[in-house]
Length: 494
Image (tube, rainbow, N blue to C red):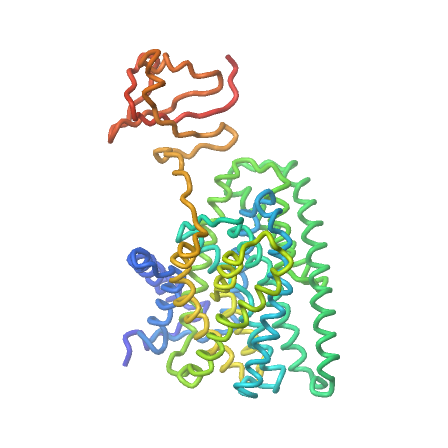
């Protein structure tokens, strides 16, 4: 008998917080060790959930509907945070290729992979051809949580504006993939699905997706513009409350778009981008810090929870198809769809397009979307879930662990200037800009004191670091070559 087999955890269980706290704490410790070996942290979270699950330590968790609810809430916060961190200044030059990847690229990936599944695997995934296309719709997108986390974990600084393009693609194609999944499920469960021709079904799917995109974009822009007025007028006593208000606006955009039969996740994403780029947020740095913390918590919960749902003992029969489909997706479907989608953009080098084709990362998003067929009772839904789960593991191992060396091998990375040392001080943006300045010989020629530097108005030295010592600056302080001056640049009244 497994150690935790006595415990069955559901969303209302008194044991839930206890087990989740132990899992989260353990996952963070494992992540610290795994990062030294280049293992993606999200992969470790997923494996931790599997180890604690029914086929591991024996923790019983099988609430698919509850898991879908929590997962949808988590991915909503993740995508909203991604929108808040999106800079239109950086994204504008790569907007067209990013959108081409998230629309045309996604649809081509579904088409290529669905055809391959139909020809090779057959009707294992239910409803004949439709089931074969449901699986790639579930897993066709690049997972936003995985892409954002890996780019940050690896601290990759990519040439040719690849980072904002990949972030735009992964942030905007999850909504489209989810819409395609729900539409296919609705068609498969419809009594008249088998009576319609393939052409009519295809046209119906495209019309519904187009409608969802149009409504989602319209609602996102409208709510974002409304947020500009609200956030200017409303003043709250703390950054945390201000952040919660911003999050509530995002939830509103998601909800109202869904009510109007639009894409809620897309509306949420556009609302966040509008707020980030059109609203002068007070203490923006602290707000983003709040959302980054929320995002990490949501990623942890989602990956651990989905890991708990997995039953490795039932996945053996899906291992062969998962390997075939996963390898086809990574080495054929994704590269082909990327090269076709990016063909009009000659400024992007072939190396950049090749690297983009390798960043077709799967993660919690596809696994979460794979719960929808299970809840809907689709024939072969368990096989879809198991296959998507295995492909996600393969993707995170093969693609996630080779992302950095592949980028370096293609000479697509560069070293970023070191960040400013603030000695743990958190300076609100409205106070000014922080800069780290190293004293040189030429600056000491006219005098060696701080006063002799002749700093212009609006610039103040806040701290001096000399080796391992931290010194409080004053005008008569004698400076030495190599001293680090932490200066703040802002308005001055003298």
